[in-house]
Length: 469
Image (cartoon, rainbow, N blue to C red):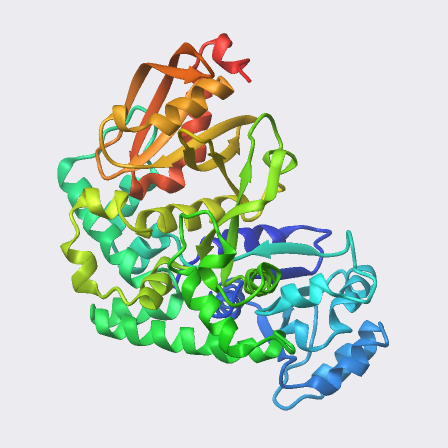
């Protein structure tokens, strides 16, 4: 199954001074499969070592001597000789605490050897390490579930894939392609992007097979909890995990998770689930400038689940429920569309310095305003709203654009692509203000094209736009 990260690894592999590559991501997003697929395509012999099965190697990594480490690995059963033409893959690297710091010595002493490491609970090792990190001696690749274009490729929908990938700002999409893409968006929202669920659905086109995979993955995650929660209450942790799927798109209130536990306790449970990458925080930012994180408030956040298919499985939404929703309900009610967009925006930012998601929230006595996501693109602040309906229903977006003096906003829904000049009036305090901006509306299936569309917009905009804050 093709993954977009193959291009990243191919580029990494071709460098003269490549560093060991560490792949980070939740369990079962396809990290190991990705490495195996790359080795096959690149014609590399794969030397794979699962450190969760060879805990005794930890003492060898502690020597920090690549020659000794290689000799011990080569002595493992059925292990081919390690040479500059092979790819050394250290899977579940978090199981050997000394393996991560040893990577720097592979870079310094065996730079000709291609080394990749991965781990499903690696974040716990990195967040609580008591060793010297090989800073500047390793490179990271962040990986999540399949995105929609990868899903189209898996379904062999090559024509539709080209329609999406080649789309540019002034292009049109045929009504036939649009209808089919919306139908496939709906199936993606049920199947999700977990590789095994996609694989099973592609083979049989049976939604029940995907549901069985979802349940298996959910059980696996719950079985993982004892590995990292320590003395925390397992029953409560499972309850927090399940309730998180109900809070997608909503500001987190710890009391909604449990009225019997202290906020600090629930906060700790959520932090652990975020470290396991089962959940991701979307943090409020005041959005007064870039970077958005510098203007953020970590106390105010929403949650995203790892995958829209898993989230719906936890919520008990079956295919019949999703298939009966009309387009407006799919976008505006519940959390499905916001989860879909959020996990794709997270994928777009995964391997950038500004990795992370933000939104804007203004809470007042008389009225509240909220923009679903705010991203930084082309050195600009770009609000992204997931909402169906007329432009008159975008009051929060109007308010944000007017207060922050933003020339461009993105709206995602189920309509054909369009661009319109918005002129409206907002209230700031006791005064009225005229607001004018460009609104680009895109169907959900074009979410991955947002960076290219924003780039094209600013390239074509006048100098006054280019210098807007």
